[in-house]
Image (cartoon, rainbow over all chains, first blue to last red; front, side, top):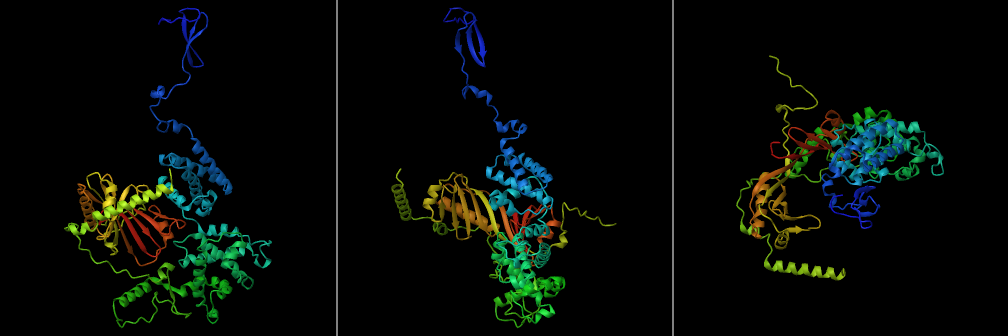
Amino acid sequence: MPGGGHCPDCGSTELVEDSHYSQSQLVCSDCGCVVTEGVLTTTFSDEGNLREVTYSRSTGENDQVSRSQQRGLRRVRDLCRVLQLPSTFEDTAVAYYQQAYRHSGIRAARLQKKEVLVGCCVLITCRQHNWPLTMGTVCALLYADLDVFSGTYMQIVKLLGLDVPSLCLADLVKTYCSSFRLFQASPSVPPKYVEDKEKMLSRTLQLVELADETWLVTGRRPLPVITAATFLAWQSLQPSHRLTCSLARFCKLANVDLPYPASSRLQELLSVLLRMAERLAWLQVLKLDKRSVVKHIGDLLQHRHTLVRKAFRDGTAEMEAGEKELRERCQGPEQGKEEVASSSLDLPEGKRPASPTPLLPPCMLKPPKRICPPPPVSTVTGDENISDSEIEQYLRTPQEIKDFEKAQAARQAARSVSNPP
Amino acid sequence: YPSPMTPMTPITPATPASESSGIVPQLQNIVSTVNLGCKLDLKTIALRARNAEYNPKRFAAVIMRIREPRTTALIFSSGKMVCTGAKSEEQSRLAARKYARVVQKLGFPAKFLDFKIQNMVGSCDVKFPIRLEGLVLTHQQFSSYEPELFPGLIYRMIKPRIVLLIFVSGKVVLTGAKVRAE
């Protein structure tokens, strides 16, 4: 071999380059002695020209499914199985996850977000098939924060350009009510509390429809309304034994979590029922309150369409009149226009079966905290002269600066004393 | 001649000018940016200004406030500044100029370049309750209503490019405008 090398053992110049398991070696072809050996491993600098393109920028990423995506797809299938969804749902949810993964923003996202994405894909699939899965349930199963879920959900719907139908309330009622452990006696459920499932479902559904019609559902989380409706339905089916049971206790023995707004929804629903009761001839004389009205829920629901029409009227005109009246009151002495009809802002004192109350969402029935006067028309042009004195009020005096620096130094010193390096 | 009918496709619902509601939204917030044109030493600004907050571990900018017009500014070391809180475009410009003057008096050669209104937020009240679940059905391509997440309906208008937050009470928040006309 040219180059003037000879074997240290036999002195031969017949040296051959050979590679033994990709390790280059210079071997004497006469005696077999290994003259030099190449390095088995290459250094970072040696590989310089092999690193022209990073993996994430190469097409290698598109050819294989990354481990992270594989994990995510497994999680999607797991979640579908835990929720006992039909098998077709699994395929759709997996397809959405894969679609999402094609976007670089998702590929580079944190693991927390990828985990939540699993839930989003399953939820979107369920919504598109009208399967009533709530975001609360998904978050509970994934141990995820609703805020994180919310952000990822909104992002993925926009990113994939999806049309996600709204949660179907009727289906949710059926699923949610069925989860209440009240249909069989047990150590925690006394016999008087056991209820027939169909009766309870039907009545709950009617109460939820009533709540929807009277503006208690729009803009609110759906589940607490259904919890309140289920409770009222259950109570009203055997009021003599069940009026003493509170909402909290009811949820506990039914083995269902009590959502925080449910008590507020309950009060609103009872108010609606009371208003309706005022329009039912044989109930007017009874002077019902929020407890006693429960006994008559059956009757009220039977005639609910007529009663709602009679008990409430179009709130818009009434509201405008009320607001005008309040503004006039604020502006100065009474104008002499005393409205006889109660304005929506006049809270009913006691229980007068007064003129029908306006049919408005509760947020519009509360009196406004304060009337915001329209701001005075600004005459600022943006080009006004700025006086020096006005600016100087924002600058520290030299003395203030010195004091501030002293205080900062003292604080630093105190910190280094309490945290010795 | 028969008057040409504007095709009522669900993709671009157009409101003819004659149907204008007469409701004028009230401006609540204006966000603007301006380039002071010089590098700034945020530590010095925080030391020598009374109305400045600087917490580099939390956020890499000085937070400065003035009383009139009542606004807040974020001043970055690159010399760029964001001004928020004004109730009109003119007030935003005046406020931004005052912040620039403060920075000038602190010893920096601040200029006032490329002032631009980035976002305008307004609100109004249509005075009647709105069935959001109905609106999301009829305007599905533009609406997002998820009561489990947020009580309002998010309406993304295309022309002009404005986002509206519509609530059951009839109150509406409008955001994303760059000019008053939008």
